[in-house]
Length: 210
Ligand code: SF4
Image 1 (cartoon, rainbow, N blue to C red):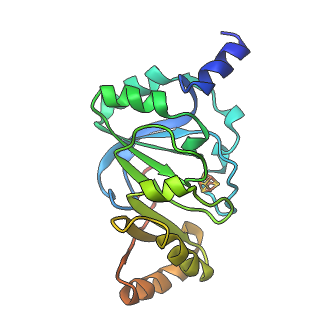
Image 2: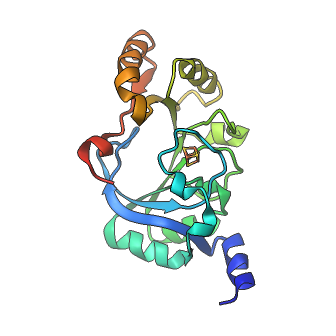
């Protein structure tokens, strides 16, 4: 297939720059501890300095993969998929999610919400980033707000973000992994004083699984 054809298919979401895909246990947030197939799509220009998947940023490094092939792999392993990145909403998610819905897969997304929404989602986990704030639509769609706590100022950011989501949205504070020892006691204290929040830990890292 020539380059133009591939680019056109990527534009339509019929091919996606797949970085990796794997069956594992969801380590974070509301669905912690449940099995799911993860699809990590390359491409993100949000630029968080503490990002733990910097290799995802450059979409060019991740080969455009036929979307049906991604779906075929998902259904071999799980009835739940977590689409993550990178920033998956860099791409048109309509086709991928339609194909997954046809196979009765439950579809979760983890997004910074910085780009327009596309696709049909059963669960939207919004993890807002200061560098590029979520769109209004992302706040409205979020069922789970997960704010990463890297420093004390992030508590203030978390409260600002919580004001923007709908009232049913679940609220999580998650320590950034490299500073967890320092931030966990502060988060514990904060959640006890502000019980609308819950703690999310990256349990997959403690379990040493992907
Ligand atoms: S939005 Fe996510 S993938 Fe993008 S830089 Fe931030 S943490 Fe990394």
